[in-house]
Image 1: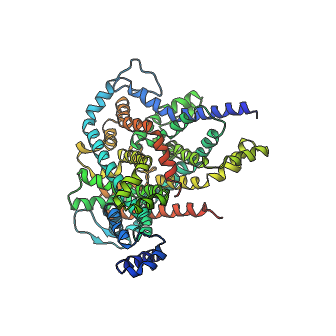
Image 2 (image 1 turned 30 degrees about the horizontal axis):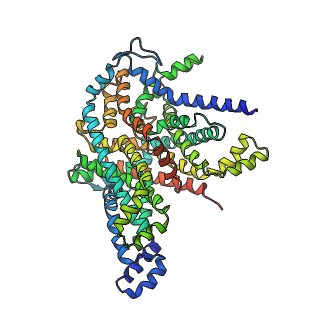
Image 3 (image 1 turned 120 degrees about the horizontal axis):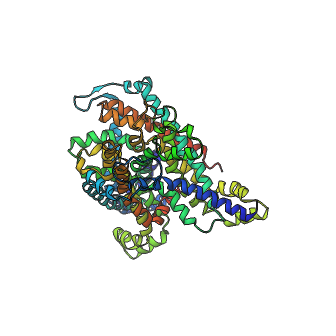
Length: 319
Length: 273
């Protein structure tokens, strides 16, 4: 932060005394001059004010509240790290964190794999219907998750479509109320995430693949590489950047998921699908434990930032 | 494998996946067409097509009010957030105001902040100033949450504009605002359209924020109203299906109309990240 702050200051100071122009131009490598750069702030200010006032300020306040014991009405009292310690002592709370990590598999890993498969299938030989498949695969991503949740709640129900299909496939003995199953509810929930996120991954990969130099495919083809090897050695390295982005976006969606859980299971059965976002909402707005809710929200943010940074580090450009 | 066999196999796999994606839609449309309160098992064609669920869901779910709130909020958030993002990106990227790199980094930081971190304190902050239960509070909060992406998106776009274009206008003596309005805006409409479409989608689909900020059931948005409708009519599948389709319909229409903008937004917006 410090070097960034230091550099712009000198041209601004130099501006009133015209003699400073040489330094300013040399520093900024652009002619505009100090007055213009200062006036430019008028353009940035409205957005900055809204962003600071309604996103950053509340975020910092949530951090502050996480060190307090407060029911939202009576004066708060200092709690130190107590709210954080509680998260690790309360089984329901730390299990919720674990559940959200499991969801990453279904919201992120499987969709990235499915997206790559769709991309591989759509590239090259498929001419007719390309747009159709793209539009269809991406469709779940634009829907409100509440409506998606209601739809799947019914699909997963005792006499829903999932059980109907299992029955038709001769697997009638496996039928159950999926979202009410103690062991399988979380997985069933995760698969809804897979359904919504795969198309997003595909869309990112297709965009990346369009920038790959076609001559690479020709060269591979001349060397006798089949579709699979072309995909493996040309397409896959070409979309590495997009894989990172898809991983980041879907991981955030997994960790912060709320809407879907709220309408499908609301954390049940027996807390098996509790996720941090749901408990933040419940603690803050149903149980009046603002401090606990804030601490959980802060922890959730720390996990998001840590995992996103890890993904970026692991997939960084080594060259 | 032979080329033709390969192509058939590809299409086969693609069709299977397309069916998997579309099956839930077929299921819910069929469910909505059963007679009200009917017990439905799996995918089944109704004995008689019944359209009255939509009217019934609209009335019971109070969708006249919900839709009005949704439209009102989206139609305020989209222009507000787009204009602010364009102005800020112009200041940061084209005018290069002092501190522009720090500020840009500050906006990008917001891309990873989960709504949950903001919403807890936001509720209590806005309660102090009387902005809970008000459209203004929600509109400003959504604009703030969408700001990082918008600023980042417009910055990416403006930095792809050749410097000569701006410099030429400057030599002609154009002021900053004229440069933005006469030189940059005419070539920025595709980027702005895409941003508007994405903002509309996010605003329409926003759930947690509205659930927390708006207690008055008559002024909630369609998705948040739907979230509570489920609680009341959890066993009436045809009614729930119809209500879901009502909430889904506007966004699907926007998606199919602006399909290209959606694709551009998702794919290009993320490239530099």
